[in-house]
Image 1 (cartoon, rainbow, N blue to C red):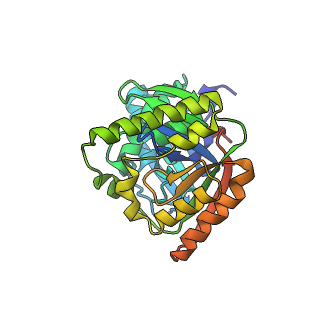
Image 2 (image 1 turned 180 degrees about the vertical axis):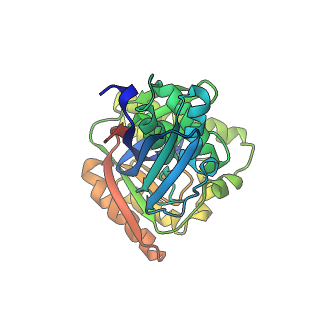
Image 3 (image 1 turned 90 degrees about the vertical axis):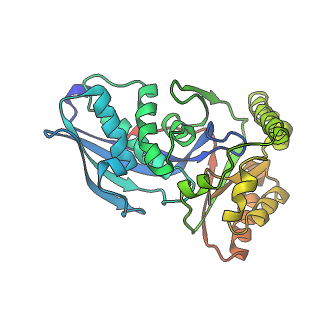
Length: 313
Protein backbone atom coordinates (compact mmCIF):
# COMPACT_ATOMS: atom_id res chain seq x y z
CA UNK A 1 0.00 0.00 0.00
CA UNK A 2 1.38 3.43 -0.85
CA UNK A 3 2.00 6.04 1.80
CA UNK A 4 -0.70 8.20 0.24
CA UNK A 5 -3.30 5.45 0.77
CA UNK A 6 -2.58 4.84 4.45
CA UNK A 7 -5.24 6.12 6.83
CA UNK A 8 -3.75 4.78 10.07
CA UNK A 9 -0.32 3.75 11.34
CA UNK A 10 1.27 2.71 14.63
CA UNK A 11 4.90 3.30 15.58
CA UNK A 12 7.09 2.12 18.44
CA UNK A 13 9.66 4.58 19.78
CA UNK A 14 12.23 3.25 22.27
CA UNK A 15 13.29 4.77 25.55
CA UNK A 16 16.70 6.39 25.66
CA UNK A 17 19.56 7.45 27.90
CA UNK A 18 20.41 11.08 27.31
CA UNK A 19 23.76 12.79 27.95
CA UNK A 20 25.65 9.49 28.47
CA UNK A 21 27.55 11.22 31.28
CA UNK A 22 29.88 13.32 29.14
CA UNK A 23 27.72 14.57 26.25
CA UNK A 24 25.16 16.88 27.84
CA UNK A 25 22.31 17.43 25.36
CA UNK A 26 24.32 15.96 22.45
CA UNK A 27 24.82 12.22 23.18
CA UNK A 28 22.21 9.54 23.70
CA UNK A 29 21.53 5.87 23.12
CA UNK A 30 18.31 3.96 22.60
CA UNK A 31 16.95 1.45 25.11
CA UNK A 32 14.86 -0.98 23.08
CA UNK A 33 13.60 -2.90 26.13
CA UNK A 34 10.80 -0.40 26.69
CA UNK A 35 9.16 2.42 24.81
CA UNK A 36 5.96 4.14 23.71
CA UNK A 37 3.49 3.10 21.02
CA UNK A 38 1.68 5.86 19.16
CA UNK A 39 -1.15 5.34 16.70
CA UNK A 40 -2.04 8.16 14.31
CA UNK A 41 -5.00 8.20 11.94
CA UNK A 42 -6.21 10.70 9.41
CA UNK A 43 -9.23 12.80 10.24
CA UNK A 44 -11.14 15.18 8.01
CA UNK A 45 -10.96 18.12 10.41
CA UNK A 46 -7.76 20.14 10.47
CA UNK A 47 -5.46 20.16 13.46
CA UNK A 48 -4.57 17.49 15.98
CA UNK A 49 -6.76 15.61 18.45
CA UNK A 50 -5.61 13.26 21.20
CA UNK A 51 -8.18 10.49 21.47
CA UNK A 52 -6.59 8.42 24.23
CA UNK A 53 -3.59 8.12 26.52
CA UNK A 54 -3.05 4.72 28.12
CA UNK A 55 -0.34 2.78 29.89
CA UNK A 56 1.94 3.84 32.72
CA UNK A 57 1.30 7.57 32.28
CA UNK A 58 -2.39 8.00 31.50
CA UNK A 59 -2.53 11.45 33.10
CA UNK A 60 -0.74 13.21 30.22
CA UNK A 61 -2.37 16.40 28.85
CA UNK A 62 -5.04 15.95 26.17
CA UNK A 63 -4.53 19.45 24.80
CA UNK A 64 -2.20 18.94 21.80
CA UNK A 65 -0.11 22.05 22.43
CA UNK A 66 0.63 20.84 25.96
CA UNK A 67 1.51 17.28 24.91
CA UNK A 68 4.86 16.38 23.35
CA UNK A 69 3.30 14.10 20.73
CA UNK A 70 0.56 16.60 19.94
CA UNK A 71 2.97 19.53 19.65
CA UNK A 72 5.24 17.52 17.35
CA UNK A 73 2.33 16.78 15.00
CA UNK A 74 1.26 20.41 15.04
CA UNK A 75 4.79 21.32 13.89
CA UNK A 76 4.56 18.70 11.13
CA UNK A 77 1.19 20.05 9.99
CA UNK A 78 2.41 23.62 9.93
CA UNK A 79 5.40 22.65 7.78
CA UNK A 80 3.73 20.13 5.47
CA UNK A 81 0.06 21.27 5.35
CA UNK A 82 -1.21 17.81 4.33
CA UNK A 83 -4.86 18.83 3.88
CA UNK A 84 -6.12 16.62 6.71
CA UNK A 85 -5.82 16.41 10.47
CA UNK A 86 -4.30 13.84 12.81
CA UNK A 87 -5.95 11.94 15.64
CA UNK A 88 -3.61 10.05 17.91
CA UNK A 89 -3.61 7.46 20.66
CA UNK A 90 -0.62 7.15 22.96
CA UNK A 91 0.27 3.94 24.81
CA UNK A 92 2.93 4.90 27.34
CA UNK A 93 5.48 2.28 28.25
CA UNK A 94 7.96 4.74 29.78
CA UNK A 95 7.22 6.20 33.23
CA UNK A 96 6.95 9.97 33.54
CA UNK A 97 9.88 11.74 35.16
CA UNK A 98 12.08 8.66 34.90
CA UNK A 99 15.02 10.10 32.96
CA UNK A 100 14.44 7.53 30.20
CA UNK A 101 13.29 9.84 27.44
CA UNK A 102 9.54 9.32 27.79
CA UNK A 103 8.57 12.73 26.46
CA UNK A 104 10.94 12.29 23.52
CA UNK A 105 9.60 8.81 22.72
CA UNK A 106 6.01 10.05 22.50
CA UNK A 107 7.03 12.82 20.12
CA UNK A 108 9.17 10.50 18.01
CA UNK A 109 6.50 7.82 17.85
CA UNK A 110 3.94 10.38 16.75
CA UNK A 111 5.99 11.79 13.87
CA UNK A 112 7.11 8.36 12.64
CA UNK A 113 3.50 7.11 12.57
CA UNK A 114 2.16 10.31 10.98
CA UNK A 115 4.92 10.24 8.37
CA UNK A 116 3.41 7.05 6.98
CA UNK A 117 0.18 8.93 6.26
CA UNK A 118 1.73 11.75 4.26
CA UNK A 119 1.63 11.71 0.45
CA UNK A 120 5.36 12.51 0.47
CA UNK A 121 7.39 11.20 3.38
CA UNK A 122 9.60 13.47 5.47
CA UNK A 123 13.33 12.88 5.82
CA UNK A 124 14.72 11.66 9.15
CA UNK A 125 16.14 15.14 9.82
CA UNK A 126 12.71 16.69 9.26
CA UNK A 127 11.19 14.20 11.67
CA UNK A 128 13.93 15.06 14.16
CA UNK A 129 13.05 18.74 14.02
CA UNK A 130 9.30 18.13 14.41
CA UNK A 131 9.95 15.88 17.41
CA UNK A 132 12.27 18.50 18.93
CA UNK A 133 9.37 20.97 18.88
CA UNK A 134 7.37 18.45 20.88
CA UNK A 135 10.14 17.69 23.36
CA UNK A 136 10.40 21.38 24.21
CA UNK A 137 6.98 21.13 25.90
CA UNK A 138 8.41 18.86 28.59
CA UNK A 139 11.90 20.28 29.04
CA UNK A 140 11.34 23.96 28.34
CA UNK A 141 14.02 23.96 25.64
CA UNK A 142 14.77 22.29 22.32
CA UNK A 143 17.40 19.60 22.73
CA UNK A 144 18.20 16.53 20.74
CA UNK A 145 19.93 13.82 22.76
CA UNK A 146 16.88 11.71 23.60
CA UNK A 147 15.03 12.59 20.39
CA UNK A 148 17.91 11.52 18.12
CA UNK A 149 18.60 8.32 20.05
CA UNK A 150 14.95 7.26 19.99
CA UNK A 151 14.54 8.11 16.31
CA UNK A 152 17.81 6.71 14.93
CA UNK A 153 18.65 3.98 17.47
CA UNK A 154 22.06 3.05 18.82
CA UNK A 155 24.55 5.55 20.25
CA UNK A 156 24.05 8.90 18.54
CA UNK A 157 25.94 12.20 18.55
CA UNK A 158 23.96 15.24 17.39
CA UNK A 159 25.69 18.54 16.69
CA UNK A 160 23.61 21.68 16.37
CA UNK A 161 20.01 22.64 17.05
CA UNK A 162 18.85 24.78 14.13
CA UNK A 163 20.71 22.65 11.57
CA UNK A 164 21.40 19.38 13.39
CA UNK A 165 23.96 16.86 12.15
CA UNK A 166 23.46 13.31 13.38
CA UNK A 167 26.22 10.70 13.59
CA UNK A 168 26.04 7.10 14.78
CA UNK A 169 28.95 6.20 17.07
CA UNK A 170 30.08 2.54 16.98
CA UNK A 171 30.11 0.64 20.25
CA UNK A 172 32.66 -2.08 21.06
CA UNK A 173 31.25 -5.60 20.88
CA UNK A 174 30.25 -7.13 24.19
CA UNK A 175 29.39 -3.91 26.00
CA UNK A 176 26.05 -3.91 27.76
CA UNK A 177 24.09 -1.01 29.17
CA UNK A 178 22.62 -1.52 32.62
CA UNK A 179 19.69 0.78 33.36
CA UNK A 180 18.09 1.03 36.81
CA UNK A 181 14.96 3.09 37.41
CA UNK A 182 14.15 3.90 41.05
CA UNK A 183 10.46 4.36 41.75
CA UNK A 184 10.41 8.13 42.13
CA UNK A 185 9.51 11.09 39.93
CA UNK A 186 11.92 13.82 38.83
CA UNK A 187 10.85 16.37 36.26
CA UNK A 188 13.23 17.38 33.49
CA UNK A 189 12.45 21.06 34.02
CA UNK A 190 13.30 20.76 37.74
CA UNK A 191 16.58 19.00 37.00
CA UNK A 192 17.52 21.62 34.40
CA UNK A 193 16.54 24.56 36.60
CA UNK A 194 19.26 23.84 39.17
CA UNK A 195 22.10 23.89 36.64
CA UNK A 196 24.56 26.75 36.67
CA UNK A 197 24.84 28.81 33.50
CA UNK A 198 28.65 28.96 33.57
CA UNK A 199 31.40 26.34 33.86
CA UNK A 200 34.86 26.61 35.38
CA UNK A 201 37.61 26.48 32.74
CA UNK A 202 39.27 23.49 34.42
CA UNK A 203 35.99 21.55 34.38
CA UNK A 204 35.40 22.52 30.74
CA UNK A 205 38.81 21.15 29.75
CA UNK A 206 38.29 17.95 31.76
CA UNK A 207 34.82 17.35 30.35
CA UNK A 208 35.98 18.04 26.79
CA UNK A 209 38.82 15.55 27.23
CA UNK A 210 36.39 12.97 28.58
CA UNK A 211 34.02 13.41 25.63
CA UNK A 212 36.88 13.10 23.14
CA UNK A 213 38.35 10.11 24.96
CA UNK A 214 35.00 8.35 25.14
CA UNK A 215 34.28 8.74 21.42
CA UNK A 216 37.85 7.71 20.59
CA UNK A 217 37.48 4.62 22.76
CA UNK A 218 34.23 3.69 21.03
CA UNK A 219 35.81 3.95 17.58
CA UNK A 220 38.96 2.03 18.54
CA UNK A 221 37.42 -0.64 20.83
CA UNK A 222 39.54 0.71 23.69
CA UNK A 223 37.69 -0.23 26.88
CA UNK A 224 40.41 1.29 29.07
CA UNK A 225 39.90 4.65 27.35
CA UNK A 226 36.14 4.39 27.79
CA UNK A 227 36.62 3.56 31.47
CA UNK A 228 38.96 6.53 31.94
CA UNK A 229 36.62 8.92 30.13
CA UNK A 230 33.07 7.98 31.14
CA UNK A 231 32.87 10.51 33.97
CA UNK A 232 30.77 13.68 34.16
CA UNK A 233 32.49 16.51 36.04
CA UNK A 234 30.00 19.26 35.10
CA UNK A 235 26.34 18.17 35.31
CA UNK A 236 26.43 15.15 37.60
CA UNK A 237 27.87 17.00 40.62
CA UNK A 238 24.98 19.46 40.43
CA UNK A 239 22.22 16.86 40.06
CA UNK A 240 23.34 13.96 42.21
CA UNK A 241 21.68 15.36 45.35
CA UNK A 242 18.31 14.91 43.63
CA UNK A 243 18.79 11.12 43.58
CA UNK A 244 18.79 9.32 46.95
CA UNK A 245 21.68 6.89 47.13
CA UNK A 246 23.44 8.22 44.05
CA UNK A 247 26.97 7.85 45.43
CA UNK A 248 26.30 4.33 46.71
CA UNK A 249 24.79 3.25 43.39
CA UNK A 250 27.73 4.59 41.42
CA UNK A 251 30.28 3.10 43.80
CA UNK A 252 28.57 -0.28 43.71
CA UNK A 253 28.50 -0.32 39.92
CA UNK A 254 32.17 0.55 39.61
CA UNK A 255 33.25 -2.01 42.21
CA UNK A 256 31.24 -4.66 40.34
CA UNK A 257 33.16 -4.01 37.12
CA UNK A 258 31.35 -1.20 35.31
CA UNK A 259 33.24 0.93 32.81
CA UNK A 260 31.30 3.94 34.05
CA UNK A 261 28.08 4.83 35.83
CA UNK A 262 26.09 8.06 35.79
CA UNK A 263 22.65 9.64 35.64
CA UNK A 264 20.36 8.76 32.76
CA UNK A 265 19.22 12.05 31.27
CA UNK A 266 17.79 14.27 33.98
CA UNK A 267 17.38 11.30 36.34
CA UNK A 268 16.43 9.68 38.62
CA UNK A 269 17.29 6.58 36.56
CA UNK A 270 20.95 5.66 36.41
CA UNK A 271 22.90 3.74 33.82
CA UNK A 272 26.19 1.91 33.60
CA UNK A 273 28.22 0.48 30.75
CA UNK A 274 29.81 -2.86 31.51
CA UNK A 275 31.45 -5.80 29.75
CA UNK A 276 28.86 -8.51 29.20
CA UNK A 277 30.52 -10.77 31.78
CA UNK A 278 30.12 -8.12 34.49
CA UNK A 279 26.66 -6.81 33.61
CA UNK A 280 24.68 -9.04 35.98
CA UNK A 281 26.90 -8.14 38.93
CA UNK A 282 26.68 -4.44 38.09
CA UNK A 283 22.89 -4.68 37.91
CA UNK A 284 22.69 -6.43 41.28
CA UNK A 285 24.98 -3.87 42.92
CA UNK A 286 23.00 -0.90 41.62
CA UNK A 287 19.64 -2.34 42.67
CA UNK A 288 21.00 -3.28 46.08
CA UNK A 289 22.30 0.25 46.64
CA UNK A 290 18.96 1.82 45.75
CA UNK A 291 17.28 -0.70 48.04
CA UNK A 292 19.41 0.44 50.97
CA UNK A 293 17.87 3.87 50.41
CA UNK A 294 14.33 2.46 50.47
CA UNK A 295 13.79 2.70 46.72
CA UNK A 296 12.25 -0.13 44.74
CA UNK A 297 13.54 -0.36 41.18
CA UNK A 298 12.96 -1.66 37.69
CA UNK A 299 16.05 -2.63 35.71
CA UNK A 300 17.18 -3.75 32.28
CA UNK A 301 20.38 -5.02 30.69
CA UNK A 302 20.47 -4.22 26.97
CA UNK A 303 22.82 -4.05 24.03
CA UNK A 304 23.76 -0.46 23.24
CA UNK A 305 23.40 -1.01 19.50
CA UNK A 306 19.68 -1.26 18.82
CA UNK A 307 16.94 -0.22 16.46
CA UNK A 308 15.34 3.18 16.54
CA UNK A 309 11.69 4.09 16.10
CA UNK A 310 9.79 2.00 13.58
CA UNK A 311 6.35 1.24 12.23
CA UNK A 312 4.70 -1.77 13.84
CA UNK A 313 1.23 -1.52 12.35
